[in-house]
Image (cartoon, rainbow, N blue to C red; front, side, top):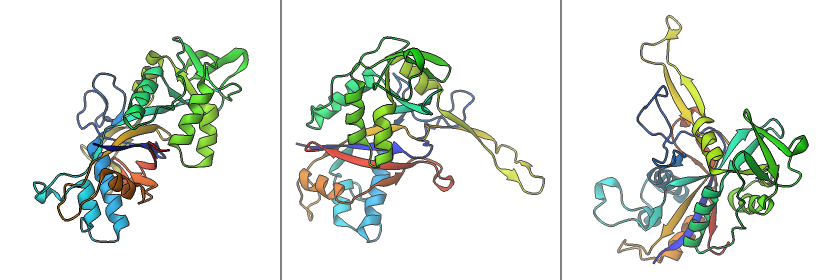
Length: 297
């Protein structure tokens, strides 16, 4: 039996959860779901950076803390000793930032994303997500009085125009803002800048509105690009919101018995507020704010 929580992830800088294989002009694309092409963060990557953060918080050497070993399992060389108690799902997209003609940018989401969130909340023991808005194609639902809306109830995202109305987005935006964000500025902005789009419109943006950055290495003698040192890397933009399902079972470590609830409480008690996820650590990429929401939140 599992004890459960959701871990919300707010990208504060561009994020590159690498896909590894180039399928086009982008040499290093981000990881995406096969069937939707929506960006994800692999659960293995999350578990690794969360383990490293817990190791740092323990004040001991790497993998010298019995709580860390019980929660995440032993080091690779001793992996056959026992399994870790924590399971992390791939982090799924929740809201994606898109530039707007008014209000600077919008966070966009869609009914399919929110239905997934509702299903995962049920796994985590929660059923408090408000009713999901369902706009038609080329329409958007946003909070009444949103700065995103121009005259005649129009919203311009990138080069596309959407007809706007509030189909219940205010309640959904407030729920996401309170559950998924930690700082007051983001929380207040999200309540007025979230737009729910049709599934197809949302999918267009998450496929085509990521950042493509040219990375180079210079030959310092000639000040030109070294041979083979020019490549293109894809980033999920700053302000993107993800979430991951966290499942905790009882410890398998013989010398450190603990229930799933105790391990989950220990993990949340580390007060991990920020993680660096994905590539580009030394150039300021992948800095994310983290917020846990348990079944009792």
